Image (cartoon, rainbow, N blue to C red; front, side):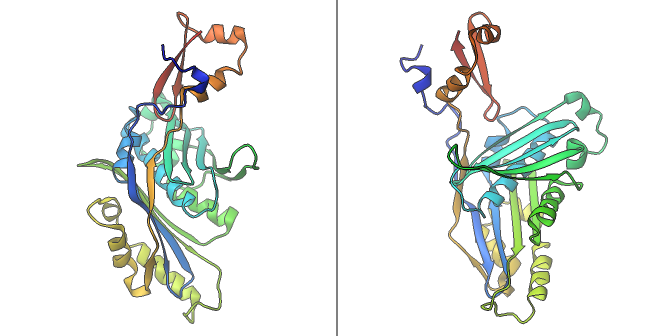
Length: 301
């Protein structure tokens, strides 16, 4: 047994110590009412998705959700975690990912194998069914949580997220999510542009036309370009928007971000009564599994 009591053991388990230094690149179009962010998970997508032996369609959906959480969290000012949670009545009953303010990512999906096998055409809509999508900012026990909810609408996860912005935030938004398995493993990424409020310093006579131009240019980005590690983020932005005076800001890192520990799980067990703990135990041992990193923690009863 370890010499450190469980409730004091905050050591990180054996999971990938992986950081992508240029994971998020924020940008704006100079003199135009357009801001955006480019997210590329690189090898981080493979490390996160391969923690679970899920079928490829589930990994693809989870990878898109990870990119979505990263691209949205990077546009907020908060200290804590931002999560995307989807609950539906389809084969995927729960999809949850989160990203901290310093770019630590994690996520997992729960699914019904029998329902998945019966799906004829695999789309986000057929995997999730009817339900809701929740966006939550959690800044700890001393702050009130902010949560936005919207019903699942659309065929793709991109459609569902854009529906939220159209109905809840009422911010004109373009979003591109992608996740695929290639020669170097899983890759995932996202591009978002949003129209921001019109101000006097904008140098274009027609802000609406500037927004339409930005939309048309953003739509030329292919999944292959978005997921290609050999193309630098700055090069992607230049190819898309060089005629619109694109200005990239300092990139931000993304990292493998499961925050489980024996101390955390010991604290959860402390909330159960003696009879409940005895029911949980098998051969005198209670096993708790971290859903995010798929690791088992064993506690003597």
